[in-house]
Structure formats: C-alpha cells, structure tokens
Length: 315
Image (cartoon, rainbow, N blue to C red; front, top):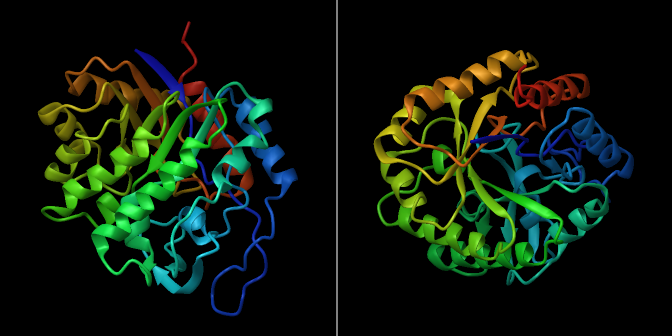
C-alpha cells in the first residue's frame, strides 16, 4: 500500500474588493505570483501530487461552471458544500459547450511538475449549486453538466496523474431514490473521460448515506474520499460493511481550522482507519478533509508540510 500526500485544491485565492452585494468580484486572471507561490509551497512540503491551486477560481468550487459564457452570476446563496458557506449562484442560460478553462489552467504549470493533480467540481454538486434557466429538466441538466465536465477533462494535458472530483453535495444535499443512481451515472460520465490518470471522488462534510455510497461505487472510479475529521466512525463502518474502490482518499487533516495537527497525528488517523477496515488498498491518498480556501497563508504552508511529512517513511 502506497501513501500519497496531496490536497483537494482550492488554495487561498486573491480576491477583488467586495461587489456591494456581499460577495467578491471576479479576479480578471489568475495571479501568476500566487500560482507560483502555491506550487513552491507544495514542492517544499514534499507533496506527492501537486495542484495548480485554482488561484483564479473567484467563485470557488462552482467556478468552472460560473466562468462559462452561457452562465450568469446569480444571487448570493448559502451551502455547506462551499468553503465559506456563501457563493454567487451560477445561472445557466444557454448550452454548456466546451470551454477549455480547466485545461488552460493546468497547461500553464504542466511543464513545472511531474506529479500534477487536476481538481474539478463533481456533476452532482454543480447541479445542486446552480440554477437551470435553459435545459428545463433536472435530469437533463445534470447530464449536461456531466458532459461539459467530461469534455473539459478530455482536454487536460498529459502531465496530469490524478483527478480529484469534488462531490461535497453528496453529503450536504444527498440525492434521494433514483437521483442517487443518476448522480453515480453522471460521475461515471466524468470519470470515463479520463484515460491516463486516476480518478478520486472526494466527499466531505460528514459521512455518505449507505445507498448513496453503494451507487457511487458503481461508477468507474479509482478511489473514494472519506472525511475522517467530520465522521470517522461512520466512514469506517461504510468501508468495513460495504467495501470501497481499490484505492481510497482519507481526509485526515482539518482544513476548516487554523490549527495544524502534527504529522504523527495524521499518520495515526490513517493507521486507525486501516486497522478497522478489511481492504488492502492499492493507494491511500492522505489529504485534508475539504478544500483549503479559508486558511491564511502561514497556516496553509504549515498544513502542506504536515501532510508531506505524514507520508514520509519513518526510520
């Protein structure tokens, strides 16, 4: 079993002045200096997978959708699925055609790391955080989002080794009967577009419902992420009772607080989970419970270093 230190991305971003409505205005372009600092901090921390950092994602997790030409910035909305709890709700007013934004962001750093990790919001989460003013049917809307994300991922540079698909709404707003299977199908569509990288569906904010978890495992993904900070007991129960994918991601570092746990503590949490589940995992992605957007820069650097040290072999 190999342990890989990484993050689910969305590192602290530069933010323009408030737009008068309680939310930030868009940053015109990713701040290259911030991007360079993020890359350097991850390399210095000896992370095994390095993210671009999403410095230009001015709408957080919904940004790849919100930045589309056929999507407008709607009213302020609240959800525990977003880092700060508040965001501008994207309003889809036209067809979700290919955009190329994800690939462009990663292409800008692809020649600077051999261990690049892409980060993308999941299709179910985006469908719960956006408003549909075009498709007119929730099933068609989610399928359109999945197809849009699949096209974006198919255009990623070859340097990408891992793709983290963030699906916090599977916990924050869990799908009911029927919708849980459709959510899995949408995730499968996204995963199928990735041919030369491992796909990790990272969930956080609690534990998955048993049926939602079961359907998620039907998708052709390489790993599922579990939030051990929010609910380690139920996470261990799900995997022990129902199994999981061949590999696993474990959110063992708390990204929602300035406090930073020692590397030994992070290792102990991984060991605790491994002792209570029967699986022989091919890979354990040792990561944070959620995205890191709310951390101040000094705590971000400390958190990255703790993650990197947590997977360093002990003598």
